[in-house]
Image 1 (spheres, helix red, strand yellow):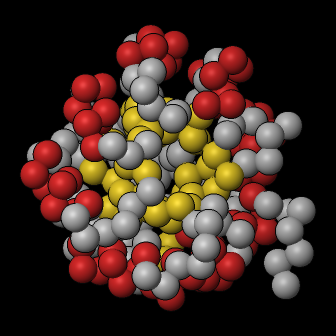
Image 2 (image 1 turned 135 degrees about the vertical axis):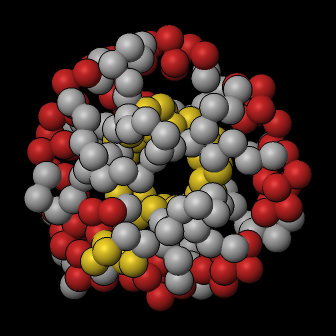
Length: 210
């Protein structure tokens, strides 16, 4: 079984981001999508990334953003990975000289093998629940049995995951990584450090968490 990497997404202040890293998170997610209650400005993102300890991946999440908007963020924020959550084409995603992942919302008719071929330049696919008109962060869970076993090692699993079911998700899917946002919040857009700690204790029980 793969020891899963964990990304805590939608962080909005440096203190929460540092807490997530100290609890064992491998990556933090910064949302550059203004309609989201978890969105940050480039200035906020700089404050957060400047406080992170070494070897923590800073992921920038974009939803159908323009090239100019993404370039503006990249000119000031030291991101290490891009996450595209909209209808971006492979050609669009490839142009920023950074590694990237593509979010796929699990509609009933989605073919994950086809998506992986289409987005072959991505480091992996992030799988999230489908809700019409909502690009992600719904807090809903989809049927994990829909994930082909041969793709699991390239999957970032998201959607409706919290401390109560993350170990089951890992055991059932064996994904490369887990992505959590709402599952570690007291209410939408506000992270709860106790919930982050509890989540990481279940996601990475092999750590001492001292």
